[in-house]
Image 1 (spheres, rainbow, N blue to C red):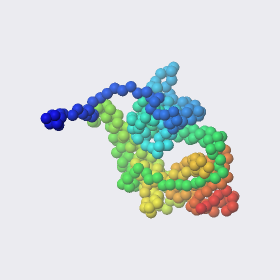
Image 2: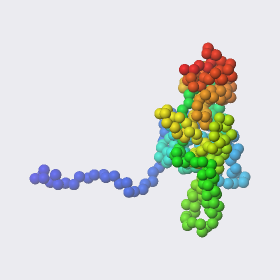
Image 3: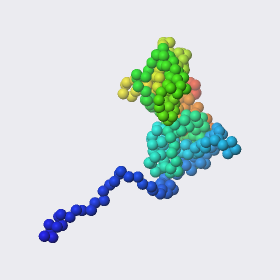
Image 4: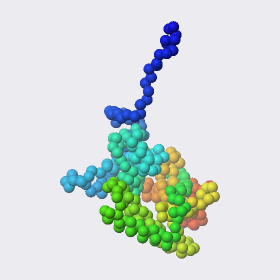
Length: 328
């Protein structure tokens, strides 16, 4: 009898209820450990000279205006994102919503992807100078010796469809259409939408017009190249600076040629360049020049594959097989 009663009893279960909202207190300082990489990056960036980033901020205490994000925060977000293999502004903004390390860096503030992307584009020169300061600090600590530097490149595919590649007359047609659409944005009866939707559409149309204008500029560059065989060229209207390059699998795709110079002692990157050149033939000289500018000394030895070590480069640098440029 007791066994029968026991089998009929309803067990008490604490079921998961996801159809609810809750308020939680968050201790931001406890989101990451004391030795976390995000803390080290924040400290390192804080020790650099940030003056050039603050000079362009227009709002101030005397005249007012909307406060800007602290440049140290935006720089630290990008540096930490790169350390995690993240290069998309949208993904960084998404991580700020849930990832403890990104939340610690932002102090739980919301940072949208447009702010992150605009900062990276507009502050390119300042970021390059900051990178030079970081390299100088690492060199001072003996982490960069330049005894041997490894040079290599990789083709990075552009986020552009082959269907986005057009001739000049097609781009002109698209541009005129985009200009008309941008002009129509001032007409309140042109479309019925919320203010937020109108603002979003206006931004998209302006960006499209800018990309089309950039496409025409890139076409003009192609026409002026001495190596151009035909005056009729095509470019992508979504990623106009990309060029058609041969891929490791033998195919062709719109791409960029990313060049990396790495100090062999600790595997630290001492030089980064992105070029439109499809080959590596003329990339060693710019790499050496960049290293010299940033670290105030040339590498004692640079190692690269045979695609870099052309006779023209060896003559220009005054190198022989036994000197500092080696081809593998």
